[in-house]
Image (tube, rainbow, N blue to C red; front, side):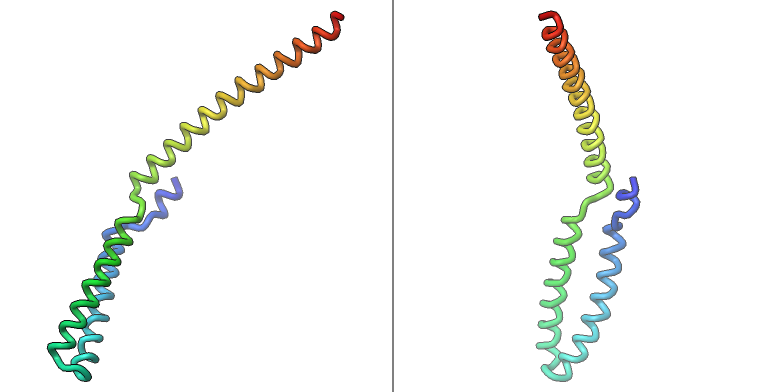
Length: 108
């Protein structure tokens, strides 16, 4: 459950990244427009902004959602229960086999 509580809210991440990107792009545009001219600066900053937004969207789509983590935890719990069941059956059968062998050797 603690891993669910530690997940990053994707919408919050997008909002933070978008705000930071917008202010940085504005500053970048100002710097480029002085050196390169307005049209070139606008084209360049638009290109950079699209690339950054594409990367952010790609990264946020890869993140696990709360449902994904909950589903994984459920699968792990189910697997643990199955493993414990089979371990118990194995150890009981081993004890019975050993007990039977001991009785076989004692009778001879």
